[in-house]
Length: 297
Image (cartoon, rainbow, N blue to C red):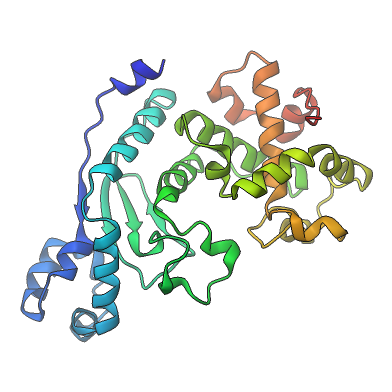
């Protein structure tokens, strides 16, 4: 199957807007605006862009981006593999035009996409020890590295195929993110589980080693069908750790509910003759009830 996928035609363009902007002078601004109207909203005066072109911090940021991403060969190869895998499972998919830019280190977005374009903010992928990220919480900084571009892109496109949960139970959210991560399994072949979800190696090992205890806690505290919004912060949202309110908290990774939902979806697909398209239509309760999920010992 992988050989078949690798032979699928997939043409797309990667445009280095960040590089053109880095090399531009104030005199180049009219040309840049005409060539890249996407990046120059009409409501902003030219003084904004002139300020950025001449700003010493922006120049330093541009240099660091070009140092980490001198060309687009590796980036384009990774994106091509992802796009081919998406197309294999969802033939209506069309590869977008890809633009790279900088964002004043707006680590909350990193990747943006619509039906026809994909924007990668390369200044949010300079490496988890980069000095530009001083002051950003460590649980976020750990994923500001080049290797995260592929998983971030895959997750973003997966959300286009996974319908948001129809109710507010913790189980529905767990399975929602479990479906997204299952698509990452299909689209990021050869990628370690830790990279797919954004865990460190220690964090993924902790989750595996404590799976029985995590599951027991969720069942004994009747969390699966609970709709308390605080559970989202405790077990779903990115965080320094998951909040069991136990001694184990500091050792746990955040988003443990996503990881557990991933295991449930994997178990469901292993134990049922169901296509990926059918998986997308099934509700969380059906998936859980038919998953035969049992924590790994």
